[in-house]
Length: 174
Image (cartoon, rainbow, N blue to C red; front, side):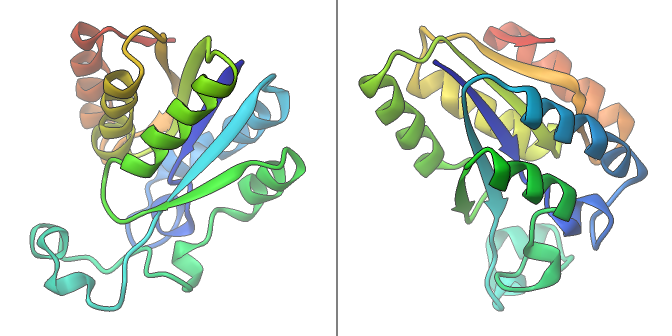
């Protein structure tokens, strides 16, 4: 079985508080990837509470975003529609990398061998790289790939740097 991980394609990262034109631009390709993917699909949702500014992340990134229940927390509507049609599992995560995601994919692997994990989404340089490395640690013998054209970073430069940083960790950039 192949697994597609759609990382944090939420309104706040697409066209909201931390949105970028690059994130907006990948939405159609992300939808196509979801619709055409042959395998299990899992999406992550960055999830913060009202006290975000008191958290370590909030102190280092003082921009309120992805507060549970807000419009910014919701997955982009076009992407959500594609995820719903494919009966994707959605995992809320309180930080960059999701231990719950790692455990879920490892559980899938125990039920039916995972042949490949493909990640897409935002931000390449924060949550995509964090989850790619985490999944590599959970399933070191499973190829982990990142589809560069379906990812966007905080900036185009940081996107490129993150892609380069993953290569020596045996994460294939496709």
